[in-house]
Image (cartoon, rainbow, N blue to C red):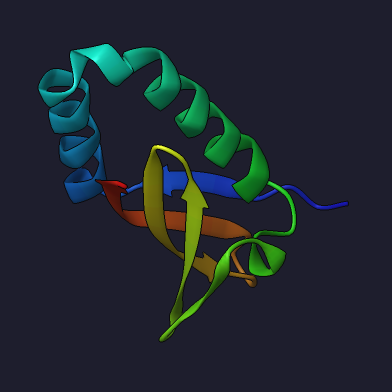
Length: 84
């Protein structure tokens, strides 16, 4: 099975920092969800989540991420992250 490189856009990185700062009581759940997203999207990302336009959406409470897959370059780009 081929692995993909996961890239977080600068916007998604900023949103993650904001979530970490704004919801200190959710830090453990946030950390676990981000780790699970990272793991899931490194293998067969086109099969994860559900289609959303040209992108895909993956829900891992307490977050939701919007990502796109470049099969040719074997890259996944997380463009947005939000709290549910």
